[in-house]
Image (cartoon, rainbow, N blue to C red; front, side):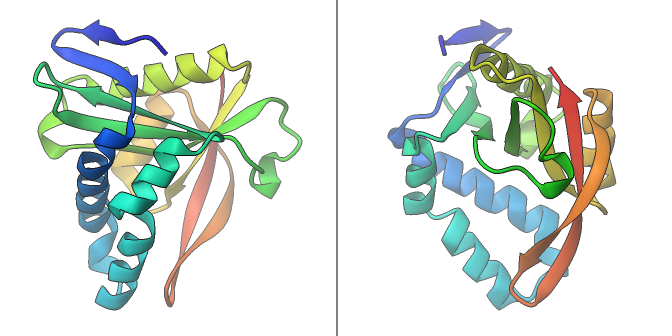
Length: 179
């Protein structure tokens, strides 16, 4: 993916040097979004497993994943998205040429500035360039703000799945968008 620029934002693939900033952003966004409903020990374990610098580096280097970041003119990461090739949820297993938008996170200072839309369109472009025809994601059923954004981007709910964190089981909506 070539580096592109829109207004004062750059879009590029993440590098291992981005791992710390992405891990910090992921930890912050996940904690703000899901932390209040989780036991502190469960949250801590989840964050260590999924948002440590080591875990983030592994995702950046994983050949089955593409992490895309949006930066400002000073190369500070404002948001990131993770495109994951792998087995789909059962409700979409018959959908051809699909790929998962596993994460799309924005720094609070980037919200409302077009960064999320730029990130989403960049993910779609990357997926199309790789030959995918459908993009899917899972979103917490109580995250109405995110659901509304995904619907505006053209995603439709096609099923649900359980998301387990420690002792807590949450229901996620599985959403799909043709590219």
